[in-house]
Length: 278
Image 1 (cartoon, rainbow, N blue to C red):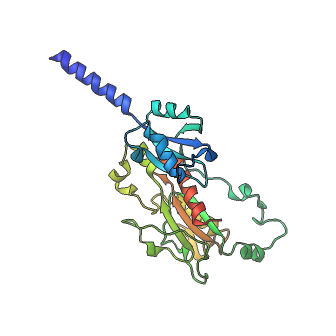
Image 2: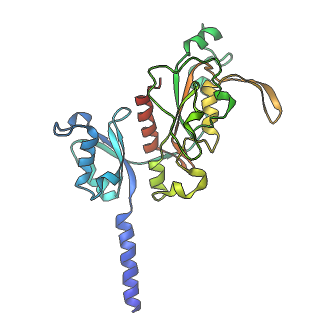
Image 3: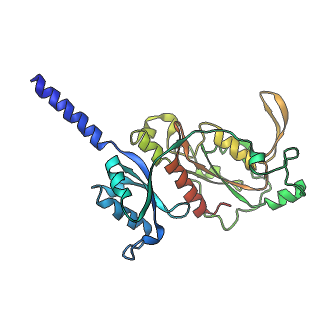
């Protein structure tokens, strides 16, 4: 009896090992799509049919604008088999990136002292940024922040094709002429959390809502409106403003409790390009 129980337990562990899946990003040769497939997404789904009985469930994202390929949930053997296809340029295991802060002015090539491009004054720079749509891929956004007040801003540019998605803690009506878009991407995160893990954590529901603060900070630094009487716990009081106060903001939440997964970041980039960000 003990031997039977031991064998059963070993078989259970073996099954867990064989069926363990991870997210992989697959880089495809865009021009190799057969004419028999109407879309690249159809081609990607077909590529998975020979590997898994549930290709629709395995395909997490399809990329056509920011990247040519897709993200899929596969076991290592399936990923290895897929990499041998002549139409596949590479298969990469999903990577998680951590939030960090860099020195934005230097990164953008701005003057270290005045923060401006050489030869341009503040008025010229603010005029140049009017109606520019900045896509922020981060931890989401807190739309009630005064930094996203749209007083005095004209109507949203006609080229904008994005939207503010609805969630239990996020009403699309929170968006306005300053914060013109808010979306979330979490399939890579959910897969890494054991499939659906995001729904088991009250603070991590699928929503553009910023629970960390990082995304709201970066978005307001980039394009926040003027906010009078701002301070840090009463210190350093003054008027807070973003670098481009007349620009628009579109927030794409791709970072979650355990970090930002490459598959979600690519999906956010894909959507941002399709939405019409600058």
